[in-house]
Picture 1: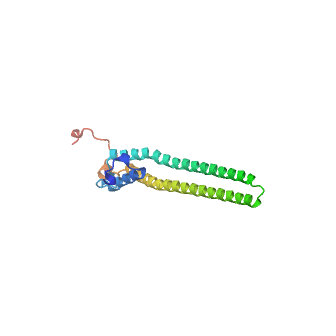
Picture 2: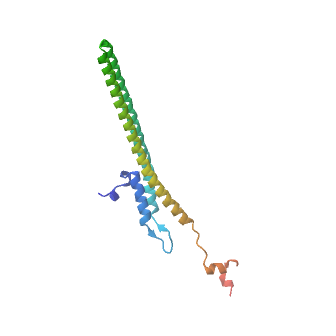
Picture 3: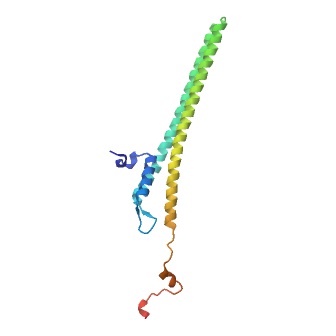
Length: 180
């Protein structure tokens, strides 16, 4: 089964927008015009499916942000647990200065590692979301450009021919049989 055989509901928003673009690009031209003929219902169905798909992609982005926050909270709890365990251990071995110093160094090392991992994950999540939004922005911009061009084409006025200009000042003849 190819991508073009899939029902609209199974395609992502970006794929739907690409199919809309393809419909417009491959549409038959109207004779003696720059306009094209497209199947309105089919294109409207694709647009509606793309609109319906938007919340899913946004929900996925929110899910990534929530997952990142949960990871950071978990990392902080682990760090706090490790630091507290280090404090308890250090209190037991207060007489041994070297052990206390080593525990502090190790706790700080773990804290630094956890913060570095959290920072890296945050940056990865932000980069991923930014890439998805940038790709969507490009597709949306192209679609808006195509829609704008289509609307401009629809608004073009046909200039009157020479026969129509000659009779512009006369009253319309409703009963041509009265004229000779």
